[in-house]
Length: 291
Ligand code: PAF
Image (tube, rainbow, N blue to C red; front, side):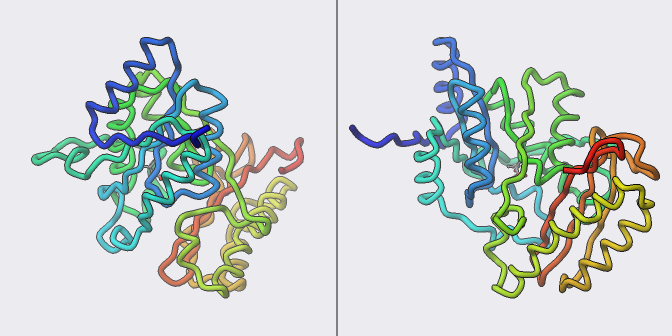
């Protein structure tokens, strides 16, 4: 029997035709939006979609509007052939790989802005980033029309922003959060890990350990300000070149927290050379143990 191969479409009409055919057959559709350079974290999203929906579409599009001018758009890894092999092995039905001109045609002048939950953290460090994300994700939702869309918890602020957009704009789909996939030493999988030298890779693993220790300390009653300041220092001591932020926010809506009066999330970004590493962990209330 021939091995399963993910079909590739590159145009919006071809994507819509395929999804319309599935819909006529009564099938449900899951969407996994990606920028390619797929790793096990993305493949887990594809697996989740396969478990929830009859059909899975994976979009691969390195979205220029979510990169700042000083960021890594040009050196962002592009490896379509390997991505398609991985998607075929994972059983994704369709890869949607549009050209930049199809997503942003000549004269493009519209942006989706999600307020409040995008302020601070990535929203401060990467000005305009979430407008780029919300705009392209909105377009991918309109183009595909999925029942469910799958987003990793690793980009936690992005996940909450997309959930907010879907609720605010009455988009008829469910956003399904998927837990972060990690290396054995705790490092969250990311396409940007490929940039790390062996020494940087060793330091990178301490990010998750320090976040988990800090989350435990906060759950155990340590003041949030003191705990996050200590975490910043611990990251610098571990060898990170800079720490963009370590923040404790409400898990549901990213409101700033002074005390642990509701389920929370500890989020951080730290830099090793030009590479920014993001991670976050849940903080359970003191009456429940931190995971
Ligand atoms: O998380 C990503 O890879 C991107 O931000 C996304 C959601 C595919 C939008 O370009």
